[in-house]
Length: 246
Figure (cartoon, rainbow, N blue to C red):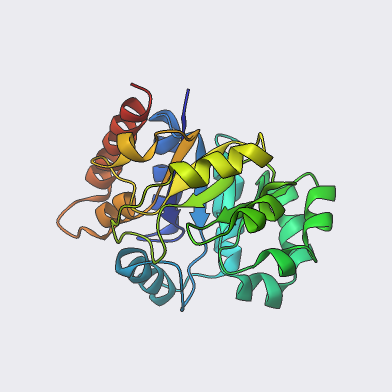
């Protein structure tokens, strides 16, 4: 069974919505939830997630809101915090580790933290029983892939193309997947550009998919009520989960 990881932006359109949507996604078959930490300069994210980030910040998002929502969500679904390194640095990695353990969050996804810098934090994160997710890009050499994946935990985040999320590009990932699996038995999940239309193709040769912009687009649709948004993202999750497993 291939896994589905879903990303949503914490605090958008509201904190209560984040909790309700997360629990609904769990019921719809999502295996792991990425709770996005709104940040003013999300360098790896496309315009959809960037817009949701900005709106959440304008609504007054604070890190305490992330911790509060996670306490209600994490007992019901495997939960990771996805954010850029700036908040982790300023708040202190030890604070995030402590809070994650307190509320039941299982790890972190930090896309702008390269392997060499991550090595400074991985030991304390793993000692606390948490995971720091490793990224592989299509531009990585085989030697670089070996170095990154040798000690990878939980899953390896394979970026489907060089660029930002939601761009919908297409690249042949099979040579990269072969190289990853040569050096690691850790599950490989592909992200960037995965939606209802691309999920089945993107899931070839990997163990799961990561979907963000397809869900956040619905959250940004002001023509829908909160109830309609939750119903729609749940249906998208069910459709993607079915497609990657048939």
